[in-house]
Length: 158
Length: 107
Length: 258
Image (cartoon, rainbow over all chains, first blue to last red):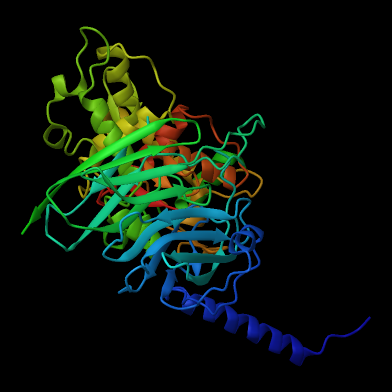
């Protein structure tokens, strides 16, 4: 029987505590939009059809830790101003792990004064989400966010 | 029996942004839940939601099972003329709902 | 030790007396203070609060004519903001007509079925919760103040005994969590003092508004105890005890809880 060294247990416990503390500390901060690395989502890849996305201007604000997966507040922002013929036409929201990947689609027939949309999404567990904005000239902008979703502590049954 | 509660500012200056907030009574059934005897509850989400300002479409959304029950939306549109915001939606079951809000635009 | 002796011993251990609720008034904390920022934001904003959709429905029902020749709520009770203010704060209460303690839901239902000739609704029917939310919301910010003496006494004592009785597979009494372990964590949730001042509330877990009785049954399921079915009198007895225990706490209906 292999004996586990005490020091490695201490190290593992400390890193676990630090990760927990970081998670708790980060709770209040909105997740920053990430780099161009989009999560692997089949429906998103199909829709993109190889087109490039830019990782700027579009931001996704969600809590790092969701109180309940049924209603996670989300804020989408796209900083303007926009050049002529370069208005935002639509924004799509994708989920990495939900049974249905496309969560929502917003369309702007008339260019709005600002792109700022608040809603509440539903998440089937801890995952990454991605938002992709399509401009009138065809350019694509994307943002991603990671959300930890906790399960209820107790069985409800009602 | 879907209905909504809408909030817009009482008056806005022409050209400024109008903050539109709406809360819709709708279960947004995912289609993945089962009832107490194991039957799947049919999917029912707001496949089409449209906001028209004095008849002109200004905002459209398609909300799937990834949007939470009793959806809340906040978005912005440009103040043009005094008039009415008309919201209409259709769900997967074919039920329609609507709501209205008056908007006063000053010069 | 018989179950009753155990309950009384536990009650004695918590130094419960008929006059003094176990939590000092200054230390009472609503469940919303244990909730995260997102849940608090949802409750604080009436437009974002999904429970207000039930209040809106209740408002429509208040003025709707039920059956031919029968009065709507408004025809007898006029403007709810005036006539219903303070009502929820004193429920559950002894009802002379029913000859037992009733909670607000049962009281409204009695009015609907007897005075309006309306069809009876199950406890968690949307319209039943909608009316209760609407009426209770008229007492928002008012302190809870129930009467537990006189004819309500035995109901109160039954509710209190239930609260301190260990039960279920986990052998837990309500007090074990909500008095002995307040502030500690269960997974990602913090154990609250267990008050009902925000109910009927919109619970994210339910994706719907539900009554306090539903929340109590859910908690009993949570400790793997047998939950009495909805409408069983012991649940009303427990509601009365809880209202006494939280007296002074302001009503928040419709609350938002995870």
